[in-house]
Amino acid sequence: MSLGVDLICETSVCSFNCIYCQLGAIQKITNQRKLFIPTTTVMEDFQSSRWQESDIITYSGSGEPTLATNLGEVAREISRKTSIPQLVLTNGTILTDRAVIQDLQNIQRTYIKLDAATEDGFQRVNRPVEGITLHFIIENILQFKQEYHGFLGIQIMFLPSNFLQLENYVLILNQIRPDEVQLNTPTRPYPKYWHISSRGGHSRELRRYESVPLRTISLEDAEKAEDFLRRETGLNIVSVYQHADSKTLTER
Image 1 (spheres, rainbow, N blue to C red):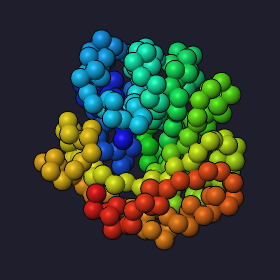
Image 2 (tube, rainbow, N blue to C red):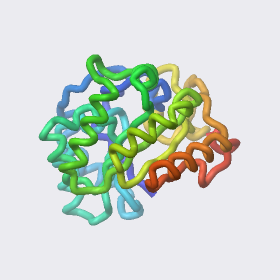
Image 3 (cartoon, rainbow, N blue to C red):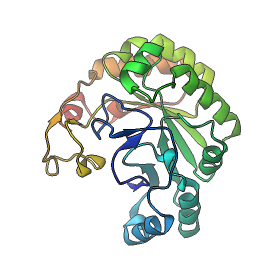
């Protein structure tokens, strides 16, 4: 059970505009940090939530969580309330910012997305803010790993296109050597326009807006990718397909 914390919440704000994003087309593409929601407001919402039932507290929501300048402050405040571990899902675009590095030291787990293993694939799938390259992201991760005291994970969103980049992934993952690699595939539709419930679980009951289903890789291909990456890297590889068949994933 994960309690989601959204430090942006006003609209979709991110330094990526991923083709599979559950938020749809990002409304503000930027890598500039700012305060979106005051820490006092976040903590009031936290206190009124069912946080005691959660196994982990996850920073995600309406875009790139490291863009919120109070990420570290919120993490410290929550740590004063509970020892439940905290996790941030990030695209790694501003890991060179010293303030971001310090913020993430207050969070036990950091998962960085790596949805492509070639520059062309990176630009096509993640559609980053101008000037961001795959090489830049990898260098950011390598530098961050040297300083970060927590658990470092890499998340790969497998699509039919980047499934063909497995050998490139091996080279990159062997360079990074993260604590864990998570293999995912799109399980939520791509909204045709911004809708607040797109920040949630996309259950059929809440899905009252137009959306586009996304192509997933097959169970057979997912198993091939998992086995190949585990064999060639020796890393801890986990897959969304380990607990659900492809039919279930397609229906989500």
